[in-house]
Image (cartoon, rainbow over all chains, first blue to last red; front, side, top):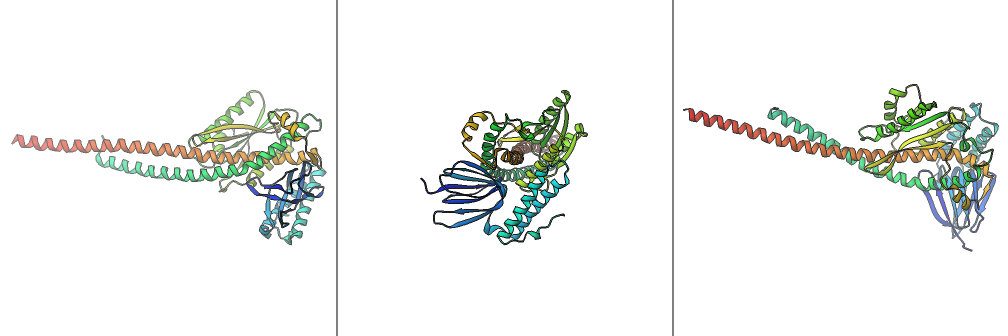
Length: 148
Length: 293
């Protein structure tokens, strides 16, 4: 069995990362999961959180993503995220933007009466996940400037 | 017969025009390259998205509880046309060709007794359409402040379209844009985005993709993916449109530059002839004056 696989992080605007890796840890909507070479083919929904990529030498690289989905098969992991940033690039400003977006979404669905309970719950969860991610990497989720 | 002075002025002004069109052509060429790069860079995401979508839609198509974004509302009486044009003119037939296609479509739908609503992206399309369809124009997205089209712009448009769909505003949504074929050819294209169109031969790829397990579940992923796919399609269309706009402007300005050059040649010939005629006339006058003595 091959001991590494191809990892691609793709955003709608461009391809962000494409490297061979040994292990990928993903924040799935139903819980985290680790993917290693030879994984069964799965398509997983992701929540906002940190993706950890481990390369051949065991070095870990972290990326913050705002949700999306990952296509996994035995030789590759393709992560399609609306926004993805290397942890080093994650500044308070970028995080504030993400938070503001999540707040705005929640507000929109809450104000709309046609939206079902699940939709509102999903938006609330998205916001909570986003906050958790910020706290995890040491950024303040309360600095975001958004209309309440 | 214009005087020599007039001709000289005209040659000067045409030369200035040529300088401007030449500069615009070069600016468009530089922007075109950037726009093409952006479109190229966005391709991997869109391709994978549609591959996953094809697998999912093929299996969800038949089921009764397929999401409305995929299965539709069950009727096709109300149409939303999203017409994407540019914010600036001087791009040859770029804007008119999209507007023409959209107008034909709108008239056809109206003739069939369907209800039509129009949403415009870009100032030029709105200006051309509001004469005939003033009552049908329901929304306009202004991108004049946007220097570089980002996914956020597409998301904004997609959110607007989706929220109208959820509120029951329409049954079918179609986008109109120019597909970039080459610098000299842009093809006005219409593409239905809601309900989602399953790719031709979806069965074949569906068979290959069904090896995938889905987590949390096919329905949940599909529900999450469909709105994203709408945004991705709009984003791709915006990028194609941006590249087409620059391509169209480049060839329009190239033509204009060439025409200005031809005009300068013609005017210069005319100027030289008039000058020669004036000299000849003067000579004749002198000679005939001398002979008369």
